[in-house]
Image 1: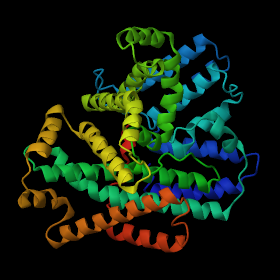
Image 2: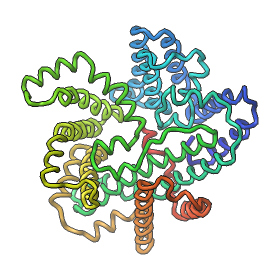
Image 3: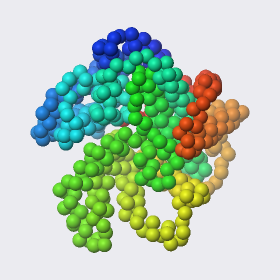
Image 4: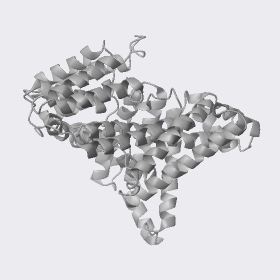
Length: 475
């Protein structure tokens, strides 16, 4: 069931009525039933696998000893590997259960926290099931933690008109980002990246920059919708994006992009790897080679490589995803290893980090590095990736016929020109909003009815029908 569909809106309307009508003792039970209905409507056959994950993890981690922790990891990762990489394992036509990548991370995070004694195991199976299956965050996150979500989910939430208005406004913003911005630029990107060989550099650069726009509009648009839905239920989800394209470095970018996923990797893979015995041994070996390197820097090398390789594989079994992970592992390590030298250099040349031109340079540099990584990620094959980089750096011609052909999904003649102008205006407006909100979180919070009406009008006129599926649903 797509979050941008008539069935979902009917489901939400009916569910909200029931949710606020049941008494205090039964509200969380109604939410649990709503979660089950949502999942069954999306994929009735595969509900058995989320049940297996929930029941096995809850039962084993009631006694969080090492053996049970390892068994929990084996069960959940086993299910994930079978479904996510079934084609690579020789099994075809095996669709992955809805949200398996995300609820697997939630179950593993819960198990790890129990094993490390950061939280007490949940005594109530139904409460734990409510946490894992909470439908707004089930399909694409944010990846919530048990300590963040449990009390909110089981608490009683009375009807609050302000929550309904704020949630509805957030949903409109998300639909606007998805159907108008991501939907429109996606046409151009698909056309160019499906056959990049021989295309001009300008065409490829525009498609790559549009892909950055599409990713952010798609991912953050989804988060706006689910945060809005959850707000209507009186439950606050963590923010997953914090204006990432205004980052002044790649490490800062990854602290702002898909925040819950990066926090998960930090808490459950990176930090345990840093303190692990195998990492200490490898770090000591490197220390004998690089005698002047700091111990802290050396200890970061192998965990960083591990996290980014796993992140790439988590996205899928394509070589482009693995290449993307290796690329960002290299960039992150380069940043870690050179940051002290960069600080000394900046001091010598009197580089003022607060200067507006310095900030603009840093943001542009970050976007350039990011764009190279996303070319690796988006390319259909290694040969396509090579063709794109080659075209950008060697094919500097501007071919009007080629540009016109790439714009055919927008329409013909004046219609295509009007669509491009609208996209540029909307992208510029979104950029202005992001910059204003970086300085003041409360910017554009007034006159919401006017903004909502304007966005609904634009959605009706320029929204792309049939573009209701989100990118991260594939993961």
